[in-house]
Picture (tube, rainbow, N blue to C red):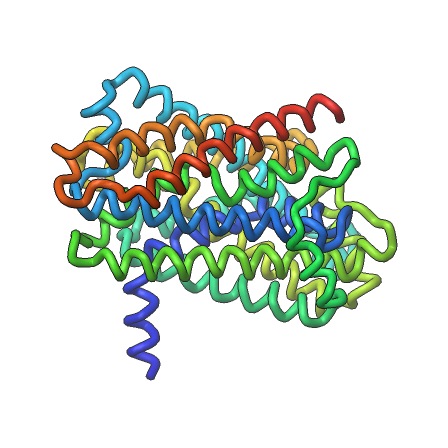
Length: 409
């Protein structure tokens, strides 16, 4: 039974990679902020984003299975280096900023939880925590292969999921509020627009789909694996939805009835503990820790992944170039612990801003999947073209919502 389960987990590795990357501390704080401020009324936004994500994961994965080409490599061949470098740099810069916030949120949460355990009452130093976690991740990346990293991510995702779901059932709000939250609508509060855009951005960021094509190729899947790729995408999207709803419900069941809001990394810990108890908050912090680690792994791997995609070279984490890049990314996590700052708002805004670049990525893929010389008999169907076109229009609209929300704050 165990061997069958392990074989199944390994077979859906690319999907778990996306879940680990997607449900990081940015997702935790965004969903917690939504639950604390608006209860479960924004459930629809999570559902819509996960449905769109499923469609896009399938499209990008299918393209690589059929053509054998990864996304950036295809862009470079068919659209030229200029626009490809623009996409590449926009993804790298966005993720550099995001990695700073991910580490900051994670270590601040652990420090707040550890305060009762230290004689000074100050908790474990965030600088020490950040240095420890960054060093541990770097050692694992330096000595591991992609297949090993997939297994580590699967473990983090499993622990994270159990922690958030158990916590949700300990503090779950009225189930009817979840159903009511499926009715679309944006609250009238000034920051509601940017929050909704952030919720969509954290699930629908364009980097996911570029990474999807790379991870599918790393599995050596081909056109005979189309059904497996679709199943993998479905499992990934369902897990994203369940984990996001669980996080939102934790805040909606405790903070929302009290009129309390989440404005920084430690608010959730400080406010949730008196309402839910030490055990529940310990589970929640464990979930945040695993969310942060499962997200930082792909963050540190991102530039080597993208460069291998762009240059059409074999992915190798042991090269000097890639090791220097990963050390640099790890060092970014020390910025907030050393110099201070409030990462949550910037995480939400950065997630909303990812929707600005995503339409460009999707438009290029819409063109590619209709090239007969490239796709052959597997050219996109009418349904696929309509779905992708609707998603492009939706992401453009939500980009304007996000910008309008930021301007109104």
